[in-house]
Length: 335
Image (tube, helix red, strand yellow):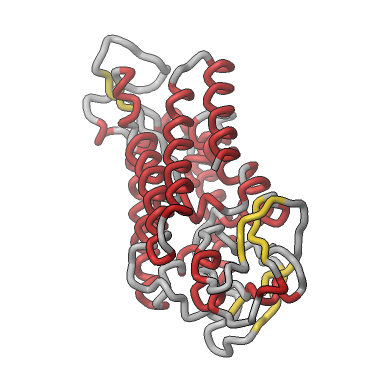
């Protein structure tokens, strides 16, 4: 928790000083404080209630990113509403415009560089999509669908990139066409179109449309596969970024091998279907790139075998539990 707080305090002060905009000071302070609250509550709650600490963090961080940044309401303090498309489409629009702010900055910190340190902690503690999906009733996964369903995530990633690239390069529809603000003061902090209502701003509708699609597909997949995290396993395009850094992440789950009784309780409750005992038996940390650091395994283990650790290691294999056989099946990283 202290390490997390130090990182976000550094980001808050560093970007504030570098840019001269106090917005970065309270932006990263809000995110850092929300994460620290959830992480701080985790060890204080009894086993059966620990998941609520993580859900609180998801709601606070995800809610701020959705309503504050995505819908632009956090900028009311500056006299404007300035929506930002925090979805992956927004990342490509900003990147192709040669801009390193807004969603490009968010993706760089949380989803490209961040995983090298915090693993896929974003998926477990901050994602606004899973903040809702994790509340659905299918918390015990029946196992993954055999085959290559996970490759749909990479197809989704490429499809979005191609669509935005075609819009920008062929139809000349780019970032300037999507941006807009609503002013409540006689200021114009950016050279963007001014609208009378936030509902007229294209950037907002790009953001909302993407989220409607994500939530809709996420709920449908959860219902069909009886698995709250089905969207993460088969459709989420952000995994294309996470798969890189998470392999080398400093933060991973470690185990005391000699205390493990091979009861497999951790595997039964793991929402991402990781065969944790395969790593424990081998004396390795949980190096699977599917781990979202939700800490569920640490809270359900009857012998307190598992805990968060810092270190340097990597693996090219994911040991995952499949739905039909239920047997350990080593799978190379999906590409």
